[in-house]
Image (tube, rainbow, N blue to C red; front, side, top):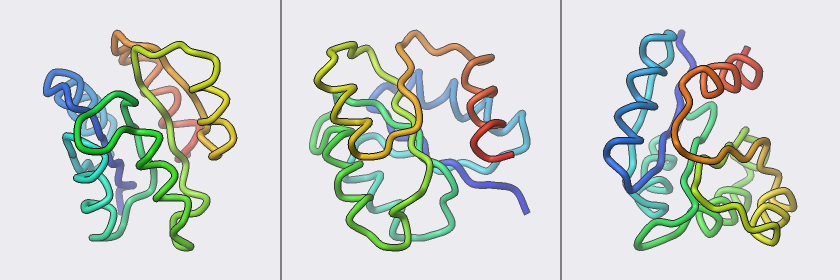
Amino acid sequence: MAKKILIVDDSGLIRNLANKASIEAGYETVLAEDGQAGLDALDKGGIDLIFSDVNMPVMNGLEMVEKVREREEYKFIPIVMLTTESKPELKDRAQELGVKAWFLKPFNKDKFLLVLSKLLG
């Protein structure tokens, strides 16, 4: 059974690039346009890894990560931030929340797939 990735980003272009790369690599995907939609998708179960932007409407990525970490079943799910943000305080907060990696946009397919293979096997 293929591993399932939740891709959360308000940019349709980034969601589509990450989705295409994931599917080509043999993963299943679930797409969400903001943190709240990401949490709603998570409620349906079966997610093995989360890729998320930081700056999004409704609920930003770090707020979503905080809420994910409050859920016992997702306390240790690998989370990777893919963002334009480079502020040290945001990276520090993400690290405190157990985020596994922080990548700066633009989207890099090779780095994306390398992270997937390292975190999901």
